[in-house]
Amino acid sequence: MNKADLPGIISSPKKPNIIQFLFTLKDEIDCSVMYDAMQKTIKRYPYFAFRIVRTENGYDKTENQLPIIVMNSFSEELVLGSEAVNYHWVAAACEGRRLKLAIHHMIADGRSAMRFYKTLLYCYFSEKYDVQLDPKGIILPDSPISPDEDVKVYNLLDGEDGTMRTTVEDPFVIPETVNDEMKGYLYQVTIPEKEFLSSSKGSDNSPLTLLTVYMAKMFQNQCPDNEKDIYAGIAIDVRDALNCPESRFSNAYVIFIKHSPSKLDLDTERLGTMTRGQIIVQSQEDIIRYVHNSIMRISAQIRSTTDQAERQRLMHEIYQLVASDPTYSISYVGNPEWGSLEPYIEEEYTLIMNKKLFLEVNAAGGKFCISWIQGFENGAYVKTFQSLLREKGIRCEVSGPFLHEWPKCCLP
Picture 1 (cartoon, rainbow, N blue to C red):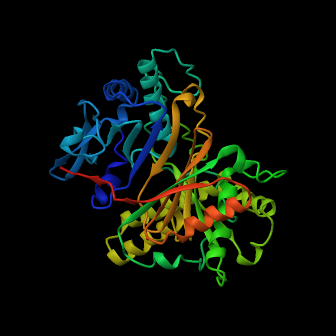
Picture 2: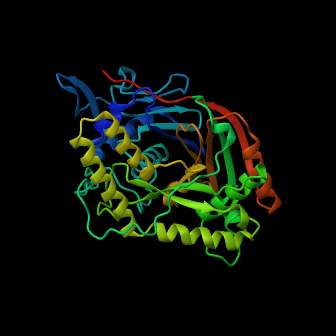
Picture 3: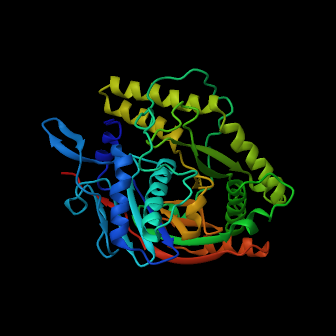
């Protein structure tokens, strides 16, 4: 059992880094069938079945053979690591047509979690509807585990080059985010998939590039006197660059896309092409390896010094590499390729906690489902975003805000 995720789990129990996936299915969920599907699924992903125990030296991970809990209501909070969820760091709940799945971010990211919940939904739909579903694109419960699934890359890699990496310098800051409020406000935003993509005819725009363009225009519309560059922090999957294509660990790095206010009057197609160019350049494997190697070298320096001031300085260097301080952040794991599961799924939202502004983007039911999570109450930004899309003839529905509480975990 790889224990590389242990330090991250125990480091911040008061602000745990937990991902919640909220699905709306076409029919009401049979919780007992979902429970059975979960137990079949976890056998395929044994590295998710563990508990944390106290030791003389702190904490350790041990195997956990207790069942994964699937609660039959959203009324009881999912507290990962607690007795209520059999001390697991994966748990779920059902209510009506909705399924909530909670996973600690240190043990998985959006890509590896997707593999897990596609297996779960495959098992559930197969049993509930007594059908033989096409398994294409789905890891089956009896599929072999690849050698690198439980591998976290720490070694230095050849072929690094950081010359084309964008760094965040004096960004536009959302005025409302200059506070220490620990509340979260969630808006659920839906945009028809085909309608959104066809809005930029004749270009090579992707959902991600279009969203960053409309977000930049939204900020400038909301704050017309702004002269600072608007930065998007975009999470990208780096598994291939790190030679661990199947790794279950969090393997997402952040690249930074810069929009200059002086260029935001250009048409959407031109801005989209410029944005896509920035994404392509910064997603090159040699740049990703540069970031990875830089983190590994700085981490070695941290381990070699006991000077707390120096450790803090070095940790800030890592923060600048992996997160920095963009205007907002956005994550899109890409087309989930639901395949035979698609007829049964209506919506999917990914929920995280963020003090500033974070967009988690999924595709389900023929639409983009965006979790717009912000750490401030002002709803003018999402409403302006909605208005800009509607001006372009793109339907955009917004529901919320819903108060989004920081998910909890429990150490022994």
